[in-house]
Length: 607
Image 1 (cartoon, rainbow, N blue to C red):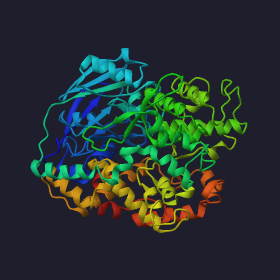
Image 2: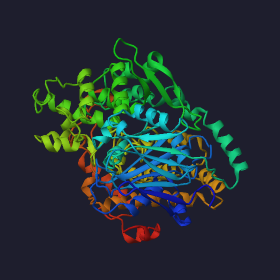
Image 3: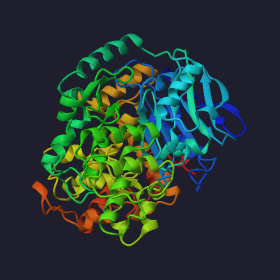
Image 4: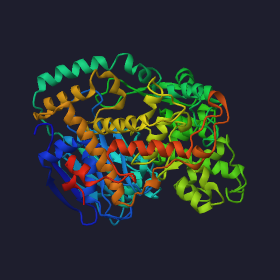
C-alpha cells in the first residue's frame, strides 16, 4: 500500500533490543492509523490486568496515512497506553513535526516496552535506534529537555519528552513535543516515566510515496482554501479561548469545582481580553493553515511567563479554581506545561481540594499553612509546584481527584469531578445534556473530544437542558466520527470545512494509498475502532457502573445564571445510557455481544 510504511518498531527498554514487525494490509485498512491503529496495537501488546506502571505496559506512538502528505492539519500523531489515572484505555493526540519525522523514519507505529535501568534518551535516526544516558536531563523541565537534546543531536531532530511530573509518575503527567505541545490527558507521561524514558528524539529523511500525488495536491489546495473560510474563523481569531465568554453567557462554564455554571470574573480571562492585552503572536502546527494556537504573555510586575493558551487551560486554572487574573492563569498554565502535567486534571484536582478546605475537611495543617480557598492565586501556583515533588499537600494532589477523595473520604467523593478517574473538562453537563451522555460513556473518561456532544447541544437539534432517547444515537455517531478523524488523522478544527466528510476523506484515503475506500467503509471503520476501545476496557474490568457522572451533577441543580434550577437526574442519565447501548447493539449491561464483534470483523482481534 502507498502512504504506509507497513511496519512498526518495537523497542524493549530493559534489554535494549529492537524488532521490526510487519503490519498486514487488512489491519491498516480496518484500523486506518492514529488512534485506531494504536488501539489495535494496545490490544496486541498490553497484557490483561497489568498495572499501568509495570514495564510490560506498552507506550505506543502511531502516525497515519495522512502524515507526510502536506495536507492541511494532517501532521498529528496518537499516543496510547493503559492509563495510570483510569486503569482503562488512555489515548491522546498531539501534533506538529514529530508525526512526519516518525513517518519518515520508516515506521507507522512505535511500541515501547520494558524499563531502562536508569534515565534514558531514545534516539531513532532513520530507523536506526540508539540509547543514550540521560542522567543530565533528570529533573529538567520539558522546554529545557527539548533544548538540551537538540543541542546534542541537532536542531533538525524532533523531540518528545516528559518533565518532572512524568519522572515522578504523576498519573496525569503529559508528554510534550515541538515547543510545548502536549499529549495531555490520561497520564501517558507517567507511563513514559515508569520506563525511565526521559525523551525520544527522532530524525528521518525517508520519503513516503503516495498513489496519486498530482490529484492529492489539487484536493489539498482546495481544502487549504476552505480551511481559511468562515468555519475556522473562530480558531484563527481568538482560538479556543473564544469559548470562555460564550459559555459564561449560556450558563455552561464550570465554576468553583462545578458548584456554579457562571463566573463573575469570566470577562477578565476571556479570549477577547487575552487577545487585546496579552497576545504575543500565533503558532501553527506543521502543515496547518488555521493557526489556532495563540501565544500570550504576562503584562504585570510578576515573573514573566509566555506560551500557548487554550480554553481548557484557562477554564481549569481560571473559573474552576475561582481565579480571574489572566496573568495568574498564564503562569499556572505554563508551569503545568513545563512540569509536564495535564492542565485539566491539575485544575480539577486542586479545585476539589479547595472545596474540601472551604468545607473544613482539609485544615491548614494539611495544606502546609496555605489558605487553600477558591481564588487564591498564590496557593494554586504553590500546589502546582508541590505536585511533582509530592511534598505536603502535593502528595495528596498527585493522586488525582478520584484517588485523593478516596484517601480523604468524609463525603468528598461526591465533589471529586471525574469520570472513570479522568477529571471533567470545561463543559457543564447539566446544561449540555448530550455532552453529559458523551462524558459518561466515553472510553477514556471525562472527555469532550471523543463524542463532541456539545455540537448537538449548541445546535437546534435538541433541547440542551433536558434529556431524551435520541441522545444515544447522536453520541454514538459523534464517537464514530471522532474515531475516524482521529485515525486518519485530521485536526477536528477542520471538520466543518468539509462538504461531505466521509466521502471526501474516503477519496483522500484512496489518493494516498491506492486502495479502494467508500464512505460507508470509512463509517464502519469508525464503529469498529469505537467498539475495540470499549472491548479493551471490558477486558480490563469495566462494568456498567463505570459509565456514570459525578454525584454532584446528579444530585444538585444549577444555582445561578440563565440555567438556574436546571438539573440532570439519575433516571434521565440512565435512560440516555440505555438508549446509547441499544444504538450500539450492546447488551443492557453495556457488553459487546459476539454477533456485533463478528459483524465488525473484530473476533480475531480480541483476546
